[in-house]
Image (cartoon, rainbow over the protein chains, first blue to last red):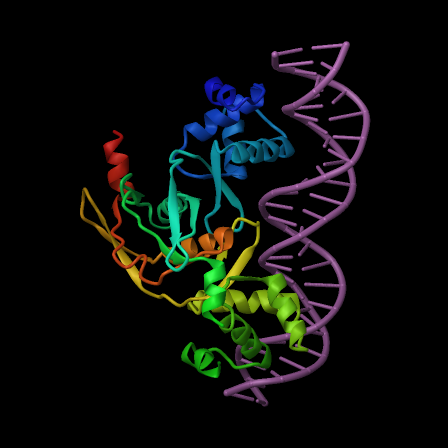
Length: 140
Length: 140
DNA sequence: ATGTATGCAAAGTATTTGCACAATC
DNA sequence: GATTGTGCAAATACTTTGCATACAT
């Protein structure tokens, strides 16, 4: 657990270690409520503001991802797949890089159906698109 | 606009017609704030509670979709692609049907990058997965 | 010792709900 | 005319922020 924090140059505190541990041990995206429950289960406690502040820190560092799974609040998961995809505009050929959006889709599907997608589901995803500028020009 | 409401057996009111009209005229997912702005632009007004109640109604009827685009609130779009995908468990071959999750991905990408994905991006999406029961058995 | 993290209390934002009145079929 | 929708006001849920104290290096 310490390794993750060190790698991202985050000061090590008891609370952060526990948070990372809780997140690492869950395949599901966890709500703040669920994280709090798990803290209680371990006989620990952290203030809500501390939890939120650290989750935001971890999110900014790319350690975790947060998604709304349709329940009006955020759910947090370890960011296992850090790979990117390239989007190329079909008109002007400008390129943009995006984080693979499939982790969110995987969480949504897991949440709604209980199905765990196989890891390679998205590997050959090719996105085709048109950038904003070219979209605007087209409409003129 | 009336047609959509009639098709779903929703009582026609002035407010609902305007809401559907606003949503129909936007390719982007709109936040409640943005919907409210557009109401003002048209010289109309609806109470927030009315807006929320109707958006929920439309969502339940499948007329619109709501997504969080990473800004902590919901954004609402007409549900253009109503097609489903079949998820088959690789172990027990149970099947589950899910709404195509790509509309949310498209909105996320449009929101973050300005790119509009081509409509056929997702047509040949094949999801492979394992259902909850079989996942649990595997871990035993 | 310095800088950063935490807890507490309060505030902010998005959304929901109860109820009386108004609009629709 | 009976039922359903709306506005208003208040409540709820989630998340954020300010500040004084505590912790980590």
